[in-house]
Image 1 (tube, rainbow, N blue to C red):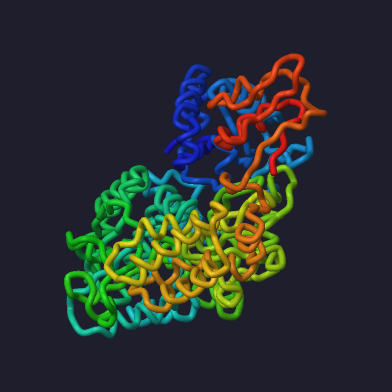
Image 2: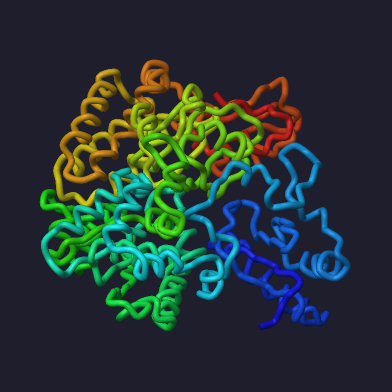
Length: 597
């Protein structure tokens, strides 16, 4: 086997691929071959490094030098200076926000400072298409330990001891869920991975599947061993083609190595795994709808009981966990449940992966210990608010979650604390909002999504979310009444209490939390016919300050409906009857003469 003096790790996650990582990788291979360094330096495609907005990301080992936003034109310089002459290319290093100081080493970047990677252990470090790299990082050691040294009851007990809870949003104790399935009558059982990640702005599961598919496979095999299952399904939405491609390749490699299939590692344990592509319905994230979809039926929730643990896929006992949950299991079995339980809080053990998005300087994927505060995530890992504007709120838990305010910045991120504040952990979406965000509009945005994704099976969700959305549209248009606000709140509680499945039961959360913490914004829309954040189009008025106007005419040239009049002698004026409130004049005026109110 060849020994290389350096490794160039290039992020091959969807985010970096979309910004040109594959072309950068090809350029590295060509440049190294041209300089006859290809036998000294290995180029490795990895999964997501997490800091997505800095892509394409290139990390050079053994130093761990972190280069960001690398373009094809930068490759020759990195090869010449760093890999040939041993000099770091400083201009491509990460720099601290608002500072010219460069941070050369991966480990010293604040974004990674408080992360503790378990589910993301291999993401950004190994080639997900190479099973040998996974094995070199202790991959399949947990499986070997389980089938050779542990009974199914031992594996189950370690998961119970760990305190691992479902990372898909419900937070139900994983070990207890497995125990229900293990004790269920029947010899045919299934383990299922829910990879139907559909929350707006969420990409936790996708990144794990793209960056470390074998961890999910190994986790599912450990679960199957503990529960007595011999067959499993990974239900992944078809919008994740790269994840599906890498999953199928990983399954094929595991079968080739005798780690998946019949008589695994020369034991009596057998397990077969399939990938099922979903059509992208958000409701299929609900476990009974997901199973219906695998069976070839329309993805619609079923009443419970019976629960899947007793009567699930094709009527057989089944267990469903999401991607992140399964990815934690190998580390728990390798290191012991007590090791995992020592991380986090008393009732929320371990770590949680979040997709950090919105008005934050550093967006991306972070894995942090349970109990960390929202402030630490947003201002230390995320670097604070873009353009140093004022923090206003964070939507946590996706469209089923809730909006929390500045007073919650020091709230510990754990299941109980978030629930008490009116939000939920959810699958891990975390959207940051600044002072220019209208919270009524945010509630409308998320309700538009859940209303559109409702399967329509039950009346409270189908009709209730529609009526709630109509009321929000009325309020954001400046046509609402205080009676509408009362009706909206009553409807929200009705939908929450009476819907069949989790989609309907949590759909009102964004409305209820914004009413709880930002009622004054709703009232301003109704009583004053004003949007305090100046975000709701129908409540905005654009005007031109005659004193500031320099008569340059840029606003008139940019106006798509020709509603701005004036000339070199006369200040420009906006015809309010024709203005469509697109904001083009506001954006192009170099003298701040156009006002927005």
